[in-house]
Image (tube, rainbow, N blue to C red; front, side, top):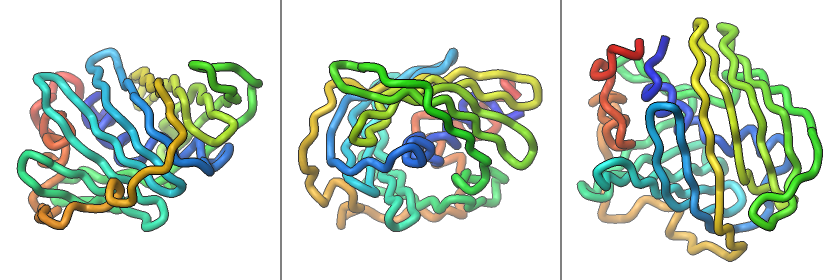
Length: 219
């Protein structure tokens, strides 16, 4: 059983907006505040998005920050460490010597059905029921609320693996529809690449999560 923090890290790599895109791909650019929580951890931040692109600036405990840039148009995700001016590139399905492996949308069979219209924070949305199943039979299921523009406004999911369960919640607020600067979705020119061979544990640290092996109580 993966630890809770390892599973959260993998879900960040997947990009929670990907299943929502199957309901309706976002056709607008926007910015918003977001919150993300499980039973063991919670953090907040800011998200900036444009069709095929997303940037998340997350604030964890003790003020630790991280930036992830997802480029669906390029099939890449970058994890930035602003304090060190370094970044790590992660491709869907890529593994490293530590044995950690990022997830790809292709790893899951996704079932999505429409529940009905609702309003969230003043925006019209459609509620969807989602079930994601991987090759080993592990499931993630719950509900997604997607705006009429295709913005994933809220998710409430339950992950089940080897009999253990973990609930995850994410919600956007203060959504503003506006054009986003292109440089938000690029690696700054003064950043240096972090060698993936150094291990995904470093990537977890950059996300504000302990490296693999530091969370044995959850395994």
